Image (tube, rainbow, N blue to C red; front, side, top):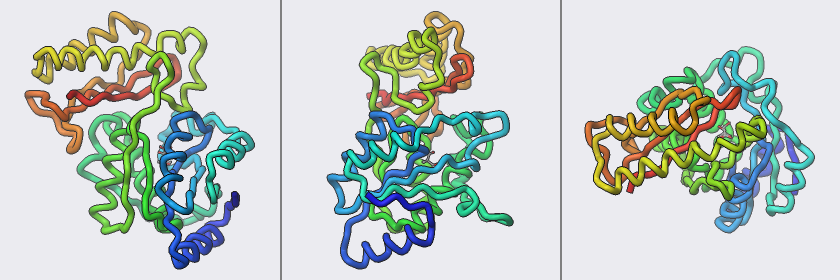
Length: 281
Ligand code: PAF
């Protein structure tokens, strides 16, 4: 496995690989790998002859007061795990190279970036789409793989690629969960023991709302209120950012939920912001 931080060298290597008919797949990450990342890597490896993983904690997608400064990191462990997963290139650019002094170009997928997390984290998706666009330009992957826990991110990147005629297939892969249902996330490392014990309720609430939908409750507002009530009853210490039922593709709301709607939640347990979602079908 090559570990490269230079944008020029990584770009050159990938260009040469493409010219020699390698099929490049890419998993963009911010590191601190967990089983979710590993499953994306394993899947991407099977799809390609060259697997590139980027590891970059992107300052542009964190707002003031968010966790940029304390985002968990363990580069040595990440490099070992990437090697074990068969990663060919671990690309770890430096912030000063990705955003040199005077940097001023941003990519924003306007239609989708203001819903859900976008309404609570202004500028977050602009930072995400910009860095992913830059990574795609450098690595030029044939396929890029994202986890569906970050459903909105996946939908936004897919739209960016379509709108900007980028030649990359964007794939979303199912959320990987702990045995008790908690969605894998690097941020789970922030949870105290007490918070970790109650965190599976985030997913249990979503399962509950899917059951309600399956048993005939389709009124969106009602589903949202019942989900909110579930969290108030079962996770009273949580600070809810949003609880929403939206169209899974457009992220827009309508009066009735239907098969293919998405129930999504973001909440804070102590200092940890957790997000999760479930398809209603
Ligand atoms: O999901 C993430 O880890 C990040 O948002 C991404 C896609 C690597 C962009 O920084």
